[in-house]
Amino acid sequence: MKTVSLNRKKQTEKDAQRQVELRESGRVPNHIAIIMDGNGRWAKERGNMRVFGHQAGVDSVRDTVEACAQMGIPHLTLFAFSTENWMRPASEVNALMQLLIQSLRKETRKLVENDIKLVAVGQLERLPDKCHRELLEAIEITKDNKRLQVCLALSYSGRWDLAQAARKISEMVINGEVGPEDVNEELVQSLLTTNSIPDPDLLIRTGGEFRLSNFLLWQAAYSELYISKKYWPDFRRDELYKSIESYQKRERRFGKISEQLEKKDMRQVSAGV
Image 1 (tube, rainbow, N blue to C red):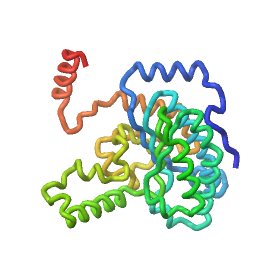
Image 2: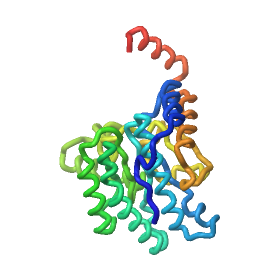
Image 3: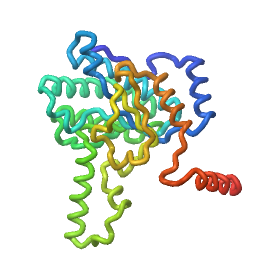
Image 4: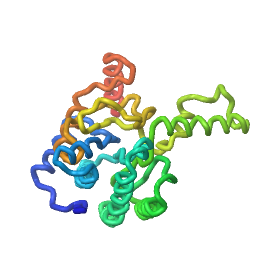
């Protein structure tokens, strides 16, 4: 498998200027989450096996991580493998696990050099032992990095995340730690596996499909959605910039009306915020 390291080439002056313009033109997402879809279709259209598409998608991961780090975006979450993906043919699952192992081994040093922290959420204990060990080792090695946090959603589903939080709440009620009246959004949020990560501001899905596919169901309640027609192996920073530009043009009301937001903005300006 051909791989390319982070910072594989010097950033062009044109690209750096594009990033400056994006930062100056409006708010930049604090957290971007991506459903990396279309690897299999990309490969099949080229007469190759599906795993070829997964391998090709590694370059898209690297370019996206690099661009987010350069942009100063602090959080990036990538939907790498869902709980439903375990139902795929064993040959494809095994190839995906081997690809994860190879990528972790090749890229951990570069993550450290670029001050990028790696974390993961999901039913990680379901990963093959070798894959699980490599993942935990990469997480440990990069734990003190500050520039960008990349979260891999592995063996993850939004319904599973909510169910495991509900089980914890049930145990807390049984043990007398909380009463039914104490169960609220804040408690649920604190028990999700993503509790240390802010909710995504922008959720990107590649491959042209219009669905969440069981990804961050609670956390994406007010995320802005961007659907890219590009398959994941064709996704590069230019498409990431387009998604950010689309995000900047939207008014995020969180259930309020425009006039309320305008008044809040005026109060913040008056207070010097």
